[in-house]
Length: 202
Image 1 (cartoon, rainbow, N blue to C red):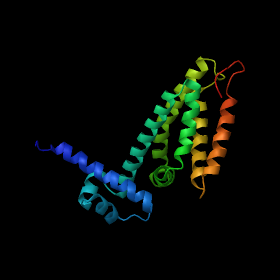
Image 2 (tube, rainbow, N blue to C red):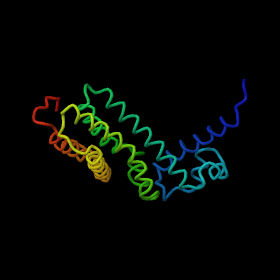
Image 3 (spheres, rainbow, N blue to C red):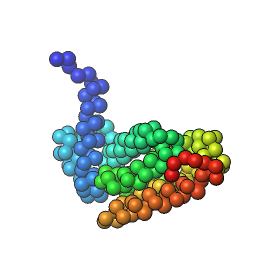
Image 4 (cartoon, rainbow, N blue to C red):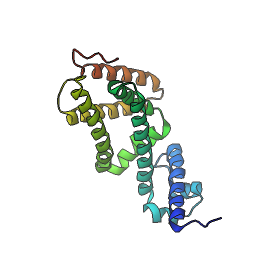
């Protein structure tokens, strides 16, 4: 059997720490998680954690970024599987709100990461979301499905509304009723963007 390279071993250690921290942060929350909880769950030393992430907050950032990447991939896949661009936008919005029911999204992405990593981190994460939404909206404008306007500004408004709706959903002990309300509301808002002559499915 071939020996693992130093690079492979380093990446394996990093992935173990991130995977373990994801579970521990969801279970305990960042504030109630000790360094020993993280190293014990990963089966690694405190030195390994410091080497790869600097401190507990650095590890939280890595975990949050991994979840954000997974969310983006799922959202893009859902949009691509839809029958047209408009249906893809709707499905993307719905799925983002549905993700607010998932424990790791609730605890890490919506609560701990924004509170602990600050505005610069939040803006960095939202930048790619806004750019992706703006491209979709620009395409819908060119197809005359929705009214013309500033696609980036509209993307910022839409993204901001979705983020706040997700926070509202996740803050409820029984969030499914809020999810249904949020989906109905976002569909109503999206329908107002459509041009009179548009015949895309609602």
